[in-house]
Image 1 (cartoon, rainbow, N blue to C red):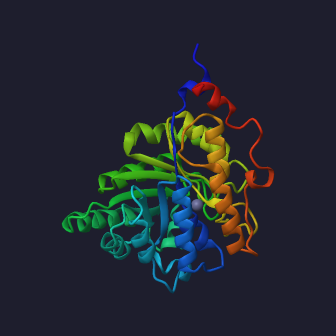
Image 2 (image 1 turned 120 degrees about the vertical axis):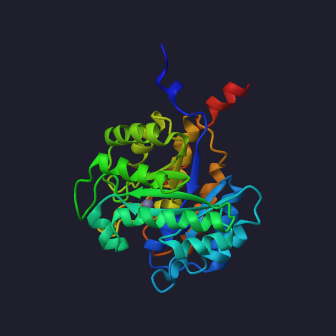
Length: 318
Ligand code: ZN
């Protein structure tokens, strides 16, 4: 008989996306020096993948106008894998020039959401990825391209998003030259059964090019959805410190899965992340001060680690 936990990955990566997904959706503009402090402290807490910003025009997202500086700083930290978001070829050219390790191109599987947010159809975004791939290759750059399929479980404008359409677009991104693909529940519509069904097929199609699961906790199912993805072998997840990055359509609602809660869940289950949770909680307290007045989320910081935390690991190593 196999124990359920035997099927889970032994290690997992948490990609911090608070500096992009989180900060872009709140009004406070963090000074560059504080963002650098955040990146440094996250690195010292053991985080090795951070999305530091987005190459979009500063007039659209003044919160993220210092992305090139942040990439330059992140590159000084050994073995830190630095991601940025790019909406189009122009952004990709900036990411290549900055020397980011990876650029995420967001695609919305919901046609209505895609037209409203990106002013492009999903297939227009696929065509843009082909151009980005050509530009990357002709520049001799090693910046990886990740196609991120968002609104994959439904959306506030269109309602239902067909699973087959999500999988078709994911395949199209790979065919257009994306090195990696990921799936996001942008508005918190997913439940664990939906995640298992979609991610199982996504992993079959993309194999080890399936890179990441991105879940929101809008309706309290963020960590349950992570667990469902772990069960089909996915071992990389986006998360935001303090769960920032709320839902624009539901003021006050929870945002992304919180980094500290996710790090705690994985560690408690014996899945290695390399993250020191005490340091992460100290960083959370610091960021909470910087973001005074903003709505933050997460549970672990309120209760702290349980007294039994780490006992199982100590017993194994003893
Ligand atoms: Zn998000």
